[in-house]
Length: 346
Length: 119
Image 1 (cartoon, rainbow over the protein chains, first blue to last red):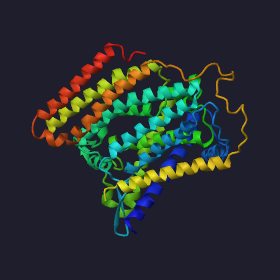
Image 2 (cartoon, one colour):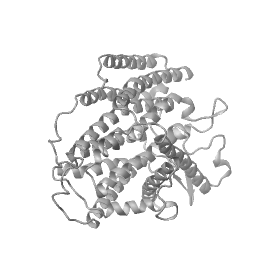
Image 3 (cartoon, rainbow over the protein chains, first blue to last red):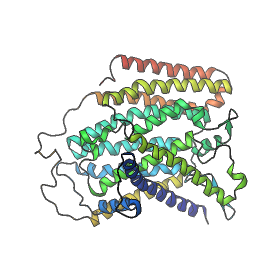
Image 4 (tube, each protein chain N blue to C red):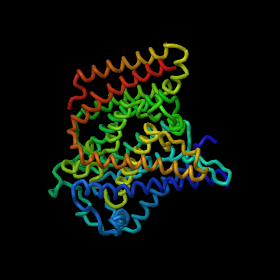
């Protein structure tokens, strides 16, 4: 097979896989929420309600597409794709596994190992803000505009602590390639701990995780779309698949954030203390590394649901206060400490 | 191969599938327009006043502060990639980062003190 054919297969497979994780996540979220609240949850469509996401998808496809009379038409149409395209495309640089050898050809389990993988993720997540603010503004409804404004202020505020936390990771590993960073995390640290970013950057991890919840608009930072105040926030006026793109985009974002957390702080596809490549064949090693990555990612996806039913929602001034008065100074100090440690150990 | 062709392929796939989804929903959904459906949502009452009015200046202030700090992060990225190599040459690079971060920290404290972030 030619290289471009392999690339095409990888693109289609990972794209579908990302969508599948997002779709199953909508089911997991509702079932786990029900479990935590001592309810049953969706259980009518298919065994354990597993076909519920499919039913929701069909419903969204067959709904009437309404554009409100007072909406700004072009911007209203532009909003959802502008949010969804960056959300879906971020997976392109996530390393989903080590490598697999098929027919004597070594294939890296990552769509593309570009040397600016990091910047690609940051850039795309910044573009997604436009989708929200344009959608909110174009709807010309008070709830949408307030939701859009809140989303913008929140996302840009938390982009800074996130950028600072990622900066310390770059400082530590000296590369922008996610695959390189995962490769540097194999082995052990100080003799006993796994050589993971989490143990080298505990403060950076906490800052990153808090900022990730704010970036994904999740509880406790779901102010742009809090139901009791703003109906659903910036997508109040949307319906049919336009609404679907916003909702799916958010779940795909969750998957991406979980994947980035795993690759930066939890050793990606590697198991601690065990080198799988030593006793597994070339094909089974590829599959095993893919599965290890998926299990770690699934844990962080479940953490999103877990936190949702554990922590109450912040007030808006508390949210901004946490971002600007706690996380950014902490991030700057963490950067300073990391620079000092790297200088001392070089 | 630098890998950017694959990224372009991936972006193209996102664009195609999302346009196909929107197209399919336009084809499959019914179209029965009525003036009632096209009204703006306002909790069941008739629309009171236009929604595009002036909003709190705090949002814009946050945007201005964001520009400063995001630019700072962007400026630090090239330094961070090369940090390990430069650190072997001595302590100069460390003091550069220290002064850069310190000035920003003082700026942030000033903004907090002035109440730029109090809502």
